[in-house]
Image (cartoon, rainbow, N blue to C red; front, side, top):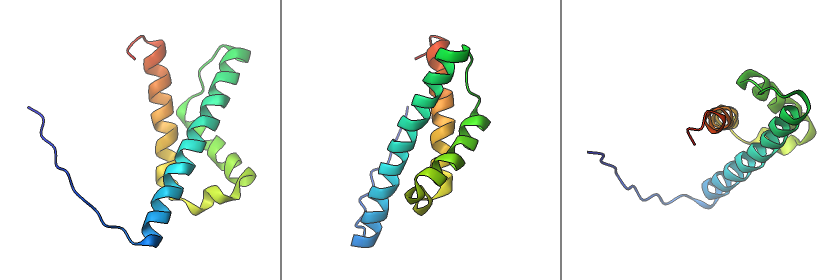
Length: 94
């Protein structure tokens, strides 16, 4: 049996702004990395490993400096989630 907890938070205006920026940055990064993954697969018929996606984050941070305002660990988790989802899709587990 799975159980869960619902917790209500009351962030300040500054905290709410940070939460929204983090969510937006992660969504943007996911889409950028997915586009990169698709283009590499179409050209080379290979999957991009997680470490290569993580290094791509550094390139994107140079191109889009506002990504540096967000927690680095949340951006790294995006590459982990994408690699896991892409692998599961092609193994017919998704």
